[in-house]
Amino acid sequence: MKQKFNILTSTCVPLPLENVDTDQIIPARFLKATTREGFGENLFRDWRYRADGTPNPDFVLNNPTYGGQILVAGKNFGSGSSREHAAWAIADYGFRVVVSSFFADIHKNNELNNFVLPVVVSEPFLQELFDSIYANPKMEVEVDLPRQIITNKATGRSESFEINAYKKHCLMNGLDDIDFLVENKDKIEAWEKKQ
Image 1: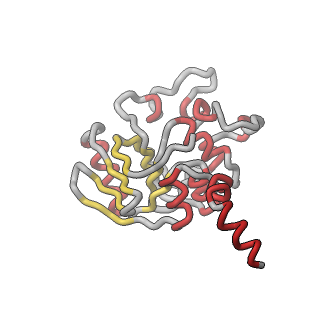
Image 2: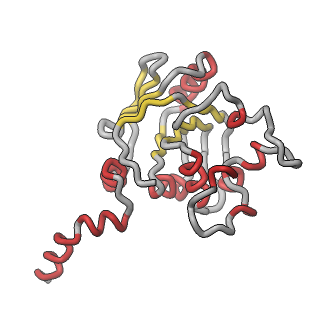
Image 3: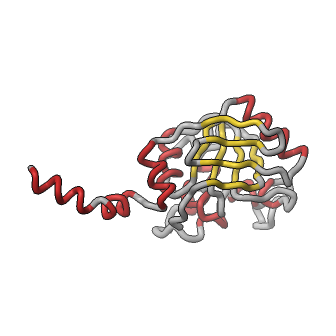
């Protein structure tokens, strides 16, 4: 789960829908579990499967044309309830990056806490990504976390993105909040002795 993040180059899965909320990401009926494992199989459950449980061939995750560790989503991704299970499902499915032009704040932080990098890009850059993916599903995107740059390798165009410095450090070093405290135990103890 705690993979270090440096530079990721991957093909992408396009989800050009706006206002995707956390109940669409992981429906409420799947929130009974207390561990993070197994949520990926229910990611976008009601879009991925028909009422009878068979896969919906029209949904992108069931289309073998598209794959990869980067989900490219429409504007306002992760709105709705603050359930962390939505980020668990995204991570468990295998996505390392979600690209959108806007994220709901709580969901954005939940992704960061689960080693998924939310990358905010401009509307034109997002549209260009969708266009490039549909033109060539094998095209790749490079996400360079140290330099905070995302590049559409089909067009060569790049944009910089923002990330909290603490979360960047944690992602690059594969640390959650507890790991970070343990890593800094000596500094904490030294500070306490001084007080």
